[in-house]
Length: 118
Length: 112
Image 1: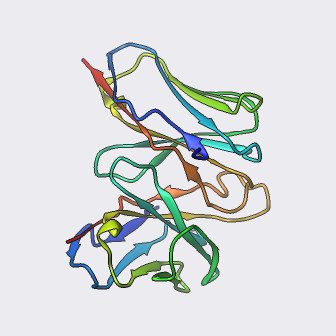
Image 2 (image 1 turned 180 degrees about the vertical axis):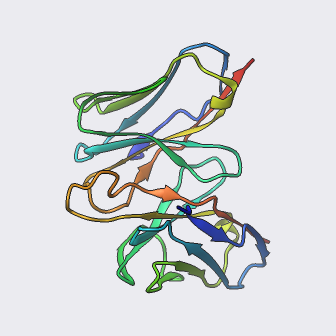
């Protein structure tokens, strides 16, 4: 069973540019969430995707957008990068179900993509 | 006031010590409480998952939830150098859905 994989692991962009981060879900998981973790802070929820649709969003502007593909992998896109976007971007997958399955609705995180905006 | 408060530390203890990590929260609707461990340059990994008030034990780790005080704790017994990491508390309102609210994390260092 493979875990959550993210790419790239590190990248450097300049202010105003656009970036795409990628995530492959853990096998058997149907939901992907993205979190932003600034240095010295806890992760902050950006949004969640279920069945290829956004299914919940945190307090992030529209220039943060995403996609989920039929194989449950996902992308996070950030347009018009700002200096404050520098952070570790974490992808987490889970099996979302309202049936009481053991281990359901629990997040498994990837190692993250560290973005530096200059 | 932030929804979840957690002292960032750092906390330094000798090997074998009992470690107590804590979070307070303001939203009384939180029902599901988690502790994640995050090693440097890694993503968070789930340590403990509890529902509502009470205690849960798993090996050297014990999680406590006191909903009346809006206070959760993680105890680590017989701490090891491999426990050196950042510990994040997290919580949510519903079982379904994954919009976790995290604390800032407490950095723990266990010296041999």
